[in-house]
Amino acid sequence: MSNVLALDIGGTHFHVALFDAGGRRLLLSEGRTESSGGREWMLNEIRERARHLITKSDQPVQSCGISFGGPVDYRKQRVSSMHVSGWRGFRLAQWVEDNLSIKCLVDNDANAGALGEFHYGAGRGTESVLYLTISTGIGGGVVCRGGVHRGKDSIAGEVGHIQVSDAGALCSCGGRGCLETVCSGTAIGLRARGFARRKPEVMERTIELASGDPDRITAELVFRAAGEGEKGAQFIVREAARALARALLTAIRILNPDMIILGGGVALAGPTLLGPVHEYLDEFSAPMLEHSTTVVQAELGNYSPLYGAAALALELA
Image 1: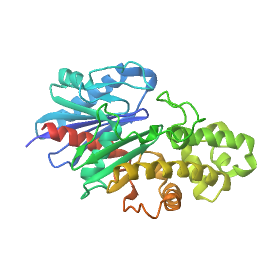
Image 2: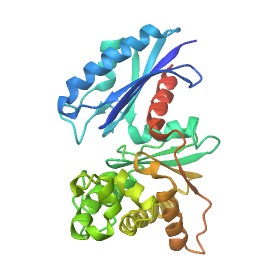
Image 3: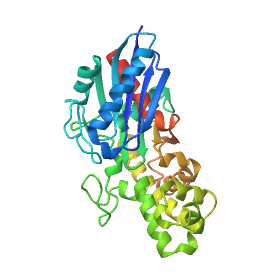
Image 4: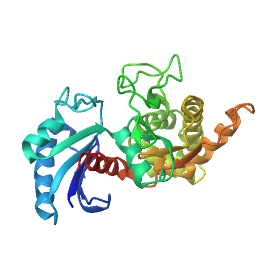
């Protein structure tokens, strides 16, 4: 018997955990990501926390899985980041082997989240799932018959970069009008701040939740105000839900998975987001193209990618 190490490196938070051979989480160490510290700050945190957990393990630790919040070349095991300096083309798996003396496998956070939910969360018992992480940006991962479908260039499942507008905002991927520019947490917060400045009378509760400062409005506050019935916040949420439903229906018609699982910070809004999404899915559906794909909230919450990292480690073990 042996235990495995699982890491989830995100733009806001990071997690380092120890799992047993059955996928049960034993120990967890987590913290906030200091983006200004760049790659070296994060590597130092990982090294020290991982070594500490390894010393606490009651079994040998023979492998490591990593969920990385950025593009990953899975074949070459290299990572990059759109938001933090120093990661471009970095051989992260090799770094783990050199510094922790255990073999390692890395994938992006969306693929890891899909694996986590498929094996340990809402997707248990299904054959295929599409997982979306809706947070600062939007990532996606596809699991079919137990394995991640990555595609020829490791970009399968990138629903967040489906173009939904010809004249939309510039996206982090370099494209324009992507779904991410409409219903990511970043986009919702930006839209709400502009709306609050132009029409403060319909965003009174959101502004109040932001301590009276429209510049402090976040997506989380928008969802809170929408849940309390504020019309302006509800308008912004429904606008995002409408775009998301269109993208999901496109994915359903291409992939027809058993289940679509929504994870990430925005998905934590629960019924406030899922309610309108289901309404629009019903509205946009065609009677001659019926589908039974279910759309649900991630069962593991923000820990879906961490559990997926454990699944990667267990593949190696």
